[in-house]
Length: 245
Image (cartoon, rainbow, N blue to C red; front, side, top):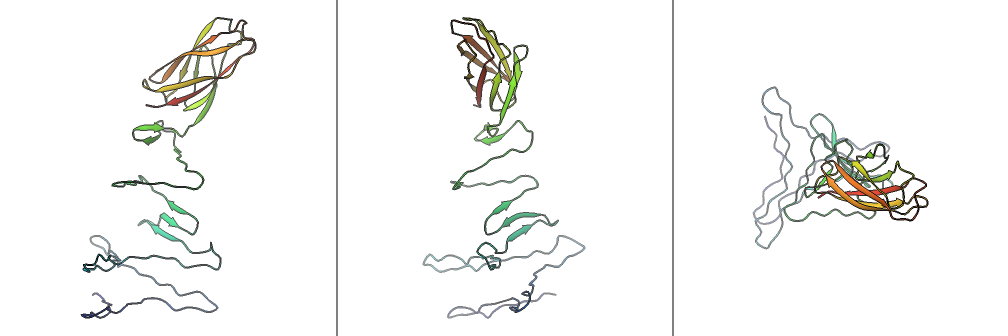
C-alpha cells in the first residue's frame, strides 16, 4: 500500500512546510537519507517524481522552483558533487564546484528554439577522437579540428589526410623558368573545396611560387614554378589549408 506525508491545506494563507532529513552529527558523519521506489517483477519499475507547486496568481508570479544542492566542504572548493546516473550505474552528468561533465554512451544533443551561447574565459575546444573523416559539423560545413600533417613528395605525389600541413618537395634542382605539378591526395578535399597553398620555405638559389591549385574529390593538383634566374639547389616546402565548402 501507499504512504502519504503532507502538510495541511490552507484556505486563507500559506500551507505548512514539510521537512524530511537526518540530524546533524558531532564527532561523526551526518545520517544518510535515501529515497527509493520499489522494484517489481512485472511491468516497468516504480518512478520517483519531484514536482514543485503551481500557482494561479494573476500577478505574473512564477511556479515553484526545484533546488538540488550538495553539501558544502570546509574549503571553498571542497563541496560535494551532484551526479546523475543511468539505470546501470554509469555517471552521465557530474556537477562539482569547478567542473560540469556530461558523458553520453551514444549521442548527446543540445537544442535551442532560438539562441544557444557557449562562452569561455580562455578557450573552447571541439575534439573528434575517432578516426572518422566526417569531422565536426558547423551548419553542414565539416571541420576536422585543424588537424596537422606532413609529407614528402614521391613520384610527383604526396598523401596527407589532414586539414592543414606541410609538403616537402622531392625536387631539389628545379630549373629556372621550369615548373612541376604535385598531386596532393587528401580525404578532406572535395571538388568544391578552397585549397589555400603557399610557399613555406623557398629553395636555395631559386625563387619558387605556387602558380595554380585545382581541387577535385579527394585530391588537389598543385603547379609550382621557379621564377628565379637560377636553378634550385635544395628542396622547398609548401604550406596548405583546406577550407571545406
